[in-house]
Length: 113
Length: 116
Image 1 (cartoon, each protein chain N blue to C red):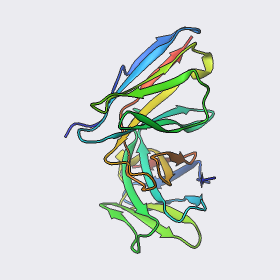
Image 2: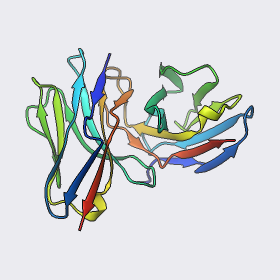
Image 3: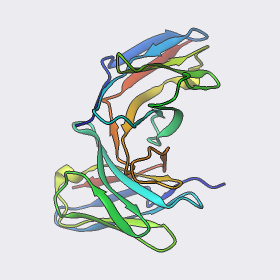
Image 4: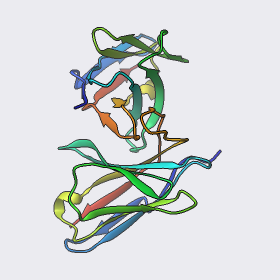
């Protein structure tokens, strides 16, 4: 069975600083995708970044990068130069096919001025 | 390109009633998945449809059902509502949804269902 673990219920960071949100996963499938989503208080899940299990390079999307360590089964999200608008819940998720995402419990990020 | 749309955004029902939620995927997307989000259980997969066929189903009772139309729009239905069905219901669409191939899912704003 697939499982995603996010051990940080909440994180605080000051504006303009970088922050790392942790995610570990467990699967026996050789092919999988790892995703990070942002959920503001409005409820909509916003796609941030994707990493495929066969990708050699760490994924980057603007201020977001994914630190993918396959041997350790970790896929941490790094947000550089935090902004006040980054305050939200962040979910790590995994997909091994048939579009069934397995989510972690999420990390609430609060960015302070 | 327009995103995933869900209607209605908010819904209040009483126990025993039934409800139908609607989801229109991004144009060209053929796979639609549904998720339930509650404070206690987190985000849980309900089911996924592709080309009008249910390909995968989560661990929910038969009161939860869905369907997909030829234009890829999808509906989910919950019959005999219970208090525990109060949740945010999220719909997501993906472009191709090849079996065994992870594909990015894009979510709609959700329907917040309250059961009294």
